[in-house]
Image (cartoon, rainbow, N blue to C red):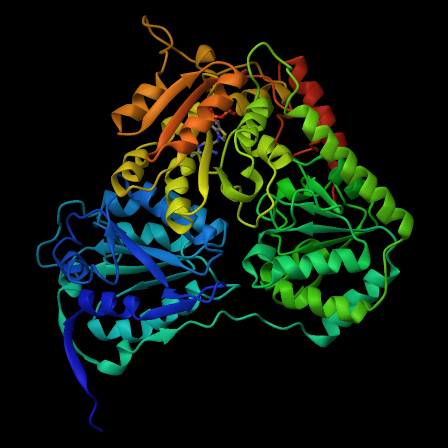
Length: 620
Ligand SMILES: Cc1ncc(C[n+]2csc(CCOP(=O)(O)OP(=O)(O)O)c2C)c(N)n1
Ligand SMILES: [Mg+2]
């Protein structure tokens, strides 16, 4: 047979293949699956992949940032903001450039978010070994730095001869776009192989439209779940991120809860699926949960988790609804069967619709629905007060959240708040209000400090029409803030609200709750030398990176500054000194933390006793 071929290098073929993958978005537009390629060039990618990318700028733009972790975090956030329908690739050099990816790959892996990692790798020929940056393994000649990415990749391949791309690339795309397998994919690209030419079949580069699968429920599983639900009187839904990632999931959830009168508690990843003022939304659930959702969780006789990994923060370390029958709709079998849950392994939208049909006119106990609605309503009124209450001498997290939302009439529709670690995830989970899926962008699977600024950039690239507001603590900002300069360079404006309390306040609180002394968290409690604790000027730091910035000290000043920040065209940082210890006391639940079994400290022994008692309430 006469196959038409085209002679290209491995790198050129890879780029051409990526550019040929298309998706149709919910608004009907047809876009490339890959929104671009982040790249920091060096040994092992500049000559091969760099040459191929340069020639493809019109179809696959290459973007440069300042740190590989930052690039990959931006890519992760981009995919999350696109509900996994669009993604980015990342190209790195062979050594530190590659290992800098590991943390970000773990973020994407834990959060089930797609991104394509294309690290350069050492010469397959081994002719110049050991090359600059080569990690030499004394026992295994095949190991290189790239192997660090194996445990945090859903698919890993090393392209040692060109023809392997013919199988590796379709597998890579299938993994990246599969609802259950979705996560980072790594294709290790030895630099000599990147540059090798091969006669590729032209058909390999034909444009392809990706179909996102929505697996259907299995009849027996469906019948079992419907029967359990029909026996329930006090059901509660735990809404996870899978609802947002499923096409039609948000509408299906709304229909389901309204038809059957079931209240909803939202996980960190699932927040935003129902609008903040939905009468059956009890707000956040779990360790960072609202009093309403956690009270319902304690009273529920059945919990239906939809698209949730059932992480400890969502289940109160399995002590929050340990007595309830657990059902789980999840597209991923690994998640669906967790903790003895009765599983319906399928897409969230499809599963909810099918379950709704099977239940027909069945409703939760009317008293339960009415009781739930009262709690939901009560919590909404309480939030109004919490975000205005002056609970400390300095502004609090809650007041800062209130001021941000009050600074624009359309905040709940237009803003996307971005956050990942520290005290803010708890505060935002309880208090942030959004009416739009995606308006709450929290990376709380890996809760990676440093995600915020880089992630905010990725979100803005995916959602340029929205106001992206990064809320970040001083600790997280200092861990990784350099992509603020990238946001200025690329013209993707983000607002960064930096809440400075001079240290790791959330861990300081945790330490004391575990019976410990304040130690090594707040800067004041850390070893310091003759110059004392630095007074860090975050506004000046942001200005030095090209952003606009200002420092404010009251809630009223913050609200006025937010108006200026919203009007600005370039990235804008607002620094606010807040009260360290003061966080919102309402809500929350037990969280399992390993407390020392023996200690000289009475407080630790007391914490251990409380811990052992709390463990009795866990689901077994
Ligand atoms: C990369 C990384 N290292 C360590 C941690 C553990 N950790 C979670 S929050 C936190 C402190 C956050 O401090 P900051 O951002 O200032 O927040 P706040 O003081 O408001 O709690 C630490 C050390 C983490 N989540 N990520
Ligand atoms: Mg702090």
